[in-house]
Each structure stands twice: as structure tokens, then as C-alpha cells.
Length: 482
Image 1 (cartoon, helix red, strand yellow):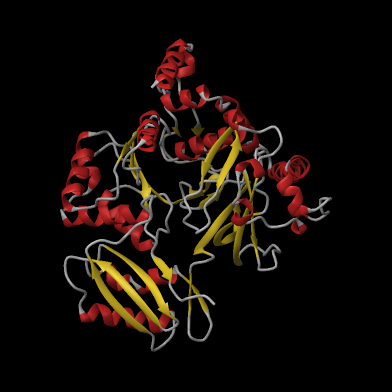
Image 2 (cartoon, rainbow, N blue to C red):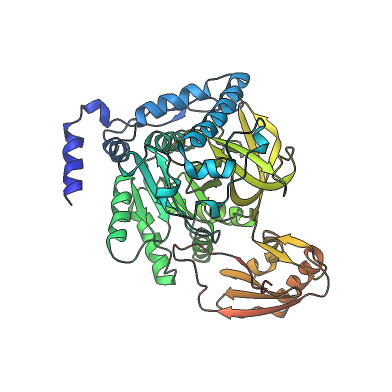
């Protein structure tokens, strides 16, 4: 508790103007055209505890906001020259100051960017003392760990300047949708530790970031009714959380005949994250909540990677990250082709993330908006594929199309487990058993999207197990590996 008292003393000792939130006046879209209607932006808050907390912890957030604005103001040629310089600057810095990265690269940096090694999560699965660059330790870094949803969890660090850049970009992107991050009230549909110090740490973070927590480990009808009452009682501005939990809550609202914005008129937008959001999920949430859905894509290591803009385009975070889509030989693919997504963090000196493989399959659009690349599509994790009897690999995202029939028959949640090359188990949560008609629709879709004559088993469950942090992993390849 002593740290909280120290922070409160810091807040009240600061000049009044330091309590004002940073203002973004987003009058133009990413392609430079003027936005219709009123100016979007952050309204000055008398006290934004979140930005004050960041400053108290040593993150240069004011400098980062100004730096991001300067990067965004560059004309395209200057912008991409800056990105290229930063890529090589990070590679050179870590080659000189990071023993682990120097061991991956060799004694000298190559002349061509694409000849640098692709880093994987396994490269970083070692003590932080081995992966930190010289001069970085507890006092001057932000530290966290990945969720392990890829199957390869690890701890990582970012220098405080780099972490501040990430938050400045969150503020700017959310402001385009009328959200003052850290002041606008967020309904947060996430997991939370159920006991111990970690639970109270999360609750403290919720307090400073203006978040009200909706824990997703219990989604009984009684709990969902309590969620609705909380929306009636609190001025929630936006919803953020796991796609599967938001879709489940949306189904319940429609079942009760409730449009959430009618009971919570302050609600502006829903931002699903961490899991794939299908077009059906999006339509379901927009109908039930009564506000637009803005898709977000990110990771713990880099923060926000892409978020939809006002026109629904996925704008990549090119100010802070360099994106490549590569083939199995680690060579870049042209825009419009699907491959493995690798990223380079342009500002992090604490630890190298250079040509770092995220574990996702993606396609970059052939189109651009101003300085920004666009994300055309995500096909799921590189390790989430069904393997068919003829040897073909089909991305797990395909099952969104196969299971449309389940969604239409009051199925609340489902997962798919591949038990053999020709056999799949569909586990589902529903108040009634799946009809024979619905099963026939699934078989028909499997014939179209996968292969003819595959076998399927359907198993009704009371609850579907989630990961320790509340994510719903919707596809499992259970075929034993040699």
C-alpha cells in the first residue's frame, strides 16, 4: 500500500496542467481526407490517473506523444526512410549490445535485411538475464510475459521510452473512435487471478485505467444478468475483451430482448481482441450492443499491431513496428500473399524483437492509406491447422464457416478437436441437444470446405474449458505427432 500513498502524493503535488489528458484532434483520416461531422479527439480530463501513473513510473509519455505526432506528420518518402533507418539501427544496436542476438546473427550484420535471422519465441525462452541488452535492468525497463496461447510462453522487457511510444499510439488510435483512454470508462471482459497479490495488482491497474472488470470465468445466466445491471448503473463508454466472451454475452442480451445501448446510452464502441472475430461475431455484437465493432489485433510483446479506422480498414502500427510476411525460407512475400507474419520493434533497446515471428498467418493489403500499410486478413496461428487425409493443411479459421449452422441453432460456445485425419469432435454448450438437421448442415459444410466423407462427432457440454487467462481456444489438433 505504501506505493499507492506515494503515487497519490505525487499526483497532488504536480501542477494542475499535468493532470490534463493528452489531446488528439483527429480531423483527418489516415489517407488525409477530412473526417465528416464533429472533430474526434480526447477531451481534457481534470485528472487522468492512468497517464499520471505512467509518468510516476518513469515512462516519458509526454515526449512519446510528441514523437508519435512528429512521425505521423512525415511525408511518405521521409516516413519509410525513417522506418528503414530504425530497423537497421535496432539491428546494429542489439548486435553490439546483446550477446544472445549476436549469437543468432554471427560476427557481422548481413548487407541485406532479409538475410537477418528470423527470431522465434523459442529463442527467447530463457532467463531475462540472457536476453536483455547491456545497460538494461529492473529499474529502466517494463517487464511482462506472454500468455502462452501460442504454446511457447516467455518473459520479455521493453525500455521505458519504447513502452511510452506504445501507449501514445493507443491513445491516438482510440481517440479516433471517441475514446479517451484512461478517462473513458471501459467494460473489460477478461480473466483475472482469483486470489493473491496478482489479483489485487490487476484491480489496481483497473482503477488507474478507468476499467470495470467483468470476469469471464463464470458466464451463468445469473452472472450475465448482473453484467446487464452494471451497464445500467455505470457510464460505460466502450467494451473491450475476448471475442468469445463478448459473443456469448451478446447472445444472452438478444435472448433477453435487450440492446445494451438502450440501457447504457453512454456506450460508443465495442473492441474485441485476443481471439479471431468472424463476420458473424461482429454482426451479433453490433445487433446486441447497438454500437459499432472495431476490430483490434495485438500482442503482449508489441502492444497494438492493427486496429480498424473510421472506414473499417485495418491500419497497421507502422509508426512503431515494421511488418513482413515471409515464406518458409524466411524470404519476404509480396503484398496480397499469405504467409508468416514477422515484426521488428523500431524503438525497443532493452531486448531484440527483430524479424520476430509472431506465430500468426497474415496477408498485407496491396493498398495503403497515407503512410500506413493495411492488414488484409489473418488466418490464425501457424500451429492451428487441420491436416486432411490427402495431406492438405487447412487453417483453423475455416471452421468459422463450417460452424455457421451451429451458431444458428442457439449454440452458445463450441470448440473443434481433430482426433484423426478424417475425424473431428465438435464440443458445444447449448440448452438443448443439436438437431439432426444442424448436424447435416455441418457435414455438408465439411464436404465443401474440407473434404468429402469426413467423420464428425457432436458432444454437448455444460461448460467449455478456457485457458488460465480466460481465452477460448476454438481449435485443437489432437493427432499424435511422430
